[in-house]
Image: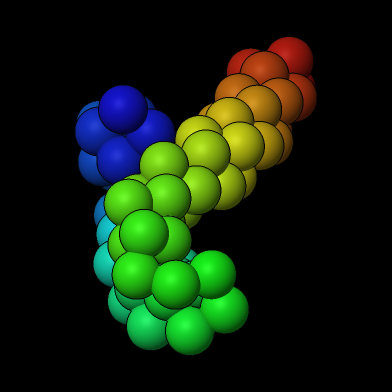
Length: 75
């Protein structure tokens, strides 16, 4: 949903950052590193872990953007 939000307000840069963060910088390393540490079953935990991190990151980015938009509207 955060990707759609940022695309809708015309901020494709942040939407792209979210996509790249999830797929390249979090999911791929998690799929490689977690099984090395916790065994093969850790592959099943990589997706929920990455999704949780992305939910928290997305909420933080949205709150920041909404606060910025609110302060611009007051001017």
